[in-house]
Amino acid sequence: MFKWTSLLMDKSIPAAHNRPDWMELDLCSVVPRFPLTVKPVKGLMMMMMIMSLFLLMMMMMMMMMMMMMMMMMMMMMMMMMMMMMIVMMMVVLVVMVVMVR
Image 1 (cartoon, rainbow, N blue to C red):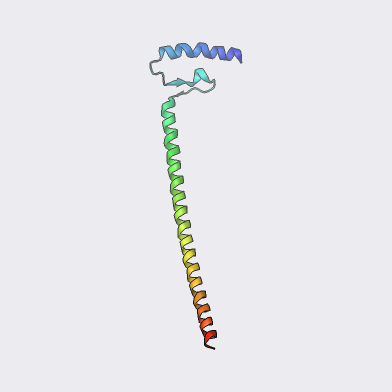
Image 2 (image 1 turned 90 degrees about the vertical axis):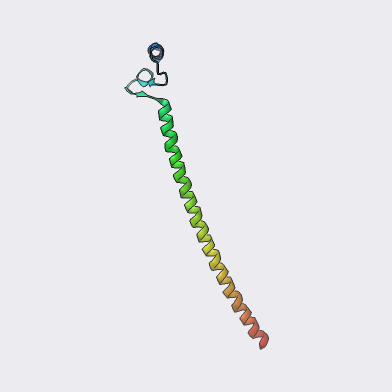
């Protein structure tokens, strides 16, 4: 482990010096068995874009669900109100009939 870290340090220090684009991170010198260069800023931007798109999708879905729930609640409330009105009218009719008799 210690040998590997020292080798990493020896490799990465001159690479950082002679490379003008210092944002380009050579993963070969950091992690073995990964022969690819990664620009972390671009990766972060991509991640942020994907996350923001996902969040937007989630927000849209949540809004749609909320709207649907609100519509359902409104429909249920309307149905309940109608039922209550019918029940009240029936009760009033029954009371009127009882009062008349």
